Length: 522
Image (cartoon, rainbow, N blue to C red; front, side, top):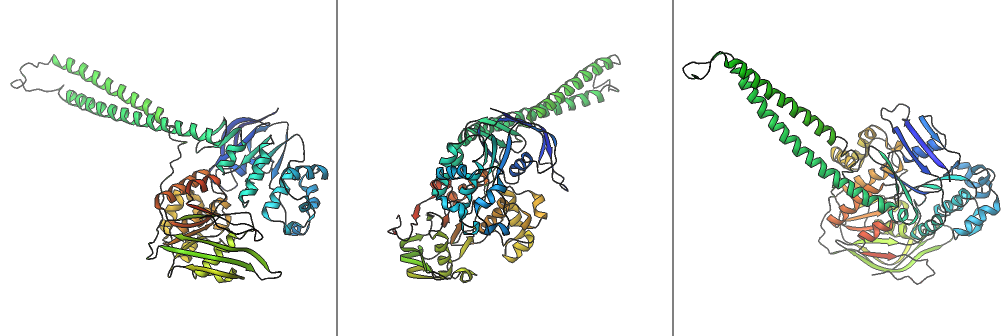
């Protein structure tokens, strides 16, 4: 057992006005399975890079263990090399037998270690890198979002693998994964950093209780402050009135007054003014007790979408529908799919990577005449795939590489109300500072929020989202969950976040390998 001790850590990027960390202090045990969460842009990856020694900072980070970081970096030139060729650079001293042993625990063909990196799927690359990562000893491992682009089966394999390990920080927004794996949580709140024992659900239950208590205390202080201000104002008016009556009086109307009364009135006024000062001190004390109560409160604002109503109940219908790519060697992706999507249906497509979920989405876009859909649809289909006439679709792609330029330019290109666009991004917790940057300089989570905001502002009969939550923080996921629950738009989604899918799905359509019998779950 070793400790990782962080003391008075302060860091900001060059040219930035805001500190990412300011006088942060905490410690963690390097034997823990530590889940690491926080809002997009809050500094999770930055902190991992600080541990790796990539940036200068003030304060101290002390431990006697070495760090290693997932995912490993590779260049375009590395795509033609094998994992085993690259492993020596990723983890000097890693031995082949150790990597093979770890890969066997990931239920993965060891042959992927000897294939060029460019031939491996994202899931295969993830598993190969994890095998290299865990092949060392006496290290504290920094694992940054390992499940992005992994299908449900891949997530289960990686989750089961990490459950058997210890001594790592896991950055993830997958609530089910954090619950299954982690025994401690490191949380970047809005104004503080906390370390707790337990998994995500343990932390969330504690947070809800603390937030509820903070709101109640805040209300109590606000009421007390209001009462004190009213009493102070009333006493102050009495004091002013009494002071004004100290000099001069009408002997006819005020026959009980004499010049000797002046000292009595002065003493009375002084006493009232003393009470006012006492009230003011109590008000200041109440305000100081109130300050900080709501600093870490996550005020997740409700968001809206503009859904349209179609005259037809059924929006998409496929019967005995098959799809095959004819480029190069003909490849059947799936066959004989049958299901339909009606207004108000929330339908999830599920299956392993490469089983045809995204291809089916492209086929729907092409059938509906979605702009640009024909550019990427080099496949042949058989069977029936019908979409309602005049169907308007709001689409989110997996890909974010096309996002470039300013937010204003993006809004103009996609015919979005710019002020509403910025308002929605703020509600999704995008900092105003980001609005001045070009989108290509955003984090992946921030790019996804741009796509989600644009989709929500696009009036549509059907929303088609292909892995929209990759890199999106937990709080925004819950915010989007609530939106979909309230508005119940017609949706086709590919999303491997188990908690998200279980909360919202009306139906889950299972896509299986083409050699299996294809039957959709209705």
